[in-house]
Length: 417
Ligand code: UD1
Image 1 (cartoon, rainbow, N blue to C red):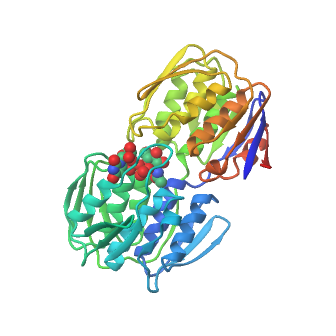
Image 2 (cartoon, rainbow, N blue to C red):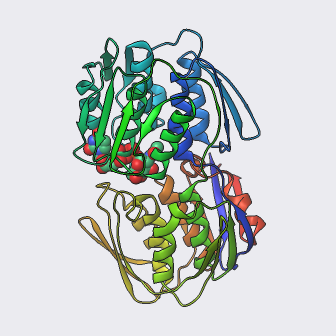
């Protein structure tokens, strides 16, 4: 297992390039199962979750090739319907193979993901919506066992704008008979990217990016070449790395519209931000605490909350973060407190009293975005910070330590003994 060692206190200067989006790439890779012809995807980041998805595609019968951020997938041969527990438990997003398998095979046997570090995260909304399209669902020995004849278009209103649920249904409905309407659908940019990809393969989807999406089912989809959108959370994390070190960084290949809420919160805190032409320049400054409430898109993203908590620890005054999406997503707070941060948690709200200097310590990463917040805090802390269990970080950030070291951070990876 690897760990990161950071000597904090160096301002970051220079340019950081953002990779393709993990959360867009995962559903798009699984959507390739809907397409018998070859699909070529560009800008796929080199991450552990992508490797897991490739393994899953293999197990399900797809042929894949990968080189330099380009992946080809051929789902032409016979597909297998089973996604095993050992794989699904390492990556919850595996449950996104349910929609494509049902649409293509009329059968899917997918392990139920179970709990994770940031909450119980059920998939009941996915299952109920697929039932509305005619699938018969059974939970047997920890597996979702689903069957159908051809899925039928349906009018579905989600109780909550679930990202994964909307994605599963988009894929299922693309090949269904007739029209499917998704109301209270997730509006996240990654959902839009999946819909745009499916449309490039011949699907007929309208309304992506709004809360009502209409899908006219088609008989079959054809191959295409598609570039995955840049990662808005990776981009936001590097913006905060500039601010927390009082540096001057240019984040390039940045999806500007998708990072609007992050940029405006950073500006509200006093960060100096200029944006244009897929580039965002962030310079530090006198930062102040702010109040943040996580919301579905276009609200403030839950995936940026932990990083902002780190930033507020070094800002002046107090700030609050209310987490409304996941019920247990403040694991990073306890670790930040080991660096000297002053944080109080009460229910779904964290109150952060800034102003105090952070001092290096040994920390334990608990989940992907929590790991990113610990790295940011380590960059700002005086002395040496050691972050263990960084396999969480590798799920979502491609060689973060290399990118940061190139712009002046004193950071290195070591093997844990
Ligand atoms: C996706 C993202 C994740 C992000 C989250 C919210 C991927 C791979 N992951 O996760 O990074 O933090 O969106 O923006 O894209 N819920 C239910 N029943 C369901 C589905 C969801 O109760 O059937 C609840 C979840 O437990 C959670 C909330 O709804 O509390 C949000 O979940 P959802 O929007 O589905 O997030 P994910 O797709 O899991």
